[in-house]
Length: 99
Length: 511
Figure 1 (tube, rainbow over the protein chains, first blue to last red):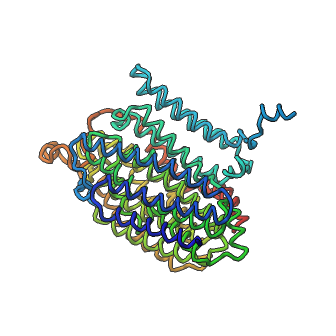
Figure 2 (cartoon, rainbow over the protein chains, first blue to last red; figure 1 turned 45 degrees about the horizontal axis):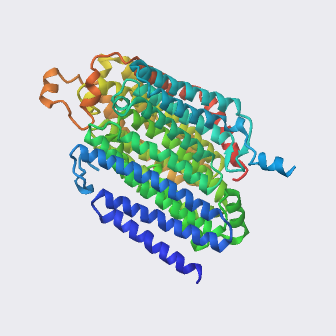
């Protein structure tokens, strides 16, 4: 199989992630979609790493995983804090700050 | 012999002297976190911020000690040159200012002092790593080390819905930005087969240029960095997060994040991608133009000072990006000069705003500064100077910054963008002068008005006002020092020229 197929799958996953971030209202699902975007990048990195025959891409992918875990931890922490303050867990109802 | 090699494996040589600023920051972060666990109230509320200041001061000392060395540390992953040094000085100064602004604030009390200041130092570490980065992996690690503590810092005033909301909004938007950036980095790696900036530059100059993969990667990378630097049209989070975050954190985000983001933009475009400049330069010029228009027009109708400064920071990002886009040594110099100036003016403004937030019940509304000129000239003058400097009035440092940007633009043949900067500055007088008008021409709203308005006029209002009537010596100090520096460097700009010259010269090999 050529690299193109891996890239196509990775681009598709990235697009699904972007779409989810834009349309979903639950911040938990938004965080899941962010994970999809990061993992799409990981897939591309590993595919390219294989294509070029060096390890840089694989190391990069490992680091992306670590960072993704940190981001989700902070995100979940903020969502729990909002829940404790009885704030609505819904992106659309966050209107305290008028954007 | 073999046994000795097994016992003492040879890792990469680590130049600890070059790394010393980073060591001071990371060490400070750990020490501050530990001291914050002590039971004594004095240790937590006074010693912790003091140690933060010490750590930042030591960092500045190490940068000056290492000033004339150009070192590629840790197998070439980080470059400690004068660009890194300059940006480190800037973010450390921003950190010192933010520590002073939050010394008696609500945010550290609510989130535990140790955690608050430790995260701030962590974020500063990320900024230094980001600007020093010499390959895609360190760039990403630096960016995330900068961002993740900032998300938490935005949400530290936990009893206030606006603060939590700002934290979550910044987290989601910032993570979308980082994910886009990572995808862009993956594509650049795919197109060139290297993660080193120099390797990528070499591969591009050998004929991989204008590859679709590479161009898509550069576009996604630009978008990701534009989110961080709040460049329009990727700025939507900026006013919301600036308004919702605790004000000292807003000040820190405004000055330090911007310095780091533009430092890395200079590094990426002038070191990694100079061969592609025909493709990225038009995009950056257009982004700069959009930011100038959107930021200045958006700020006109604001009634909250923090939102106003949020939109103003979008416009200023447009000015600074123009300096990056021209991609000449003169442009890089103007960019760095403007970053220094931007730090001075914003800290002066935020010092006054934080002080008024604690003294009056109006939060960051215009009413909070009404009548300030008659009541408290030591806060009124720094705020006035900051507003005039942000608008670019002569005899302030803001004028010098804008002058050099316009000079660089005209020199490179982009007179239309220079004219747009002038027009943007004229529009910006429309809102900066409104602040000055409130300070000097309006009288303070009477006590009955404050009672009728209820306590929180806008979100972000009441919590900071609980220390009503204190003198806030550290806030005055920050506002007066940075306001004074704004005027001083407006009249005697030579030290700033020299600093910017040194920093820009490290890039000139690539330009």
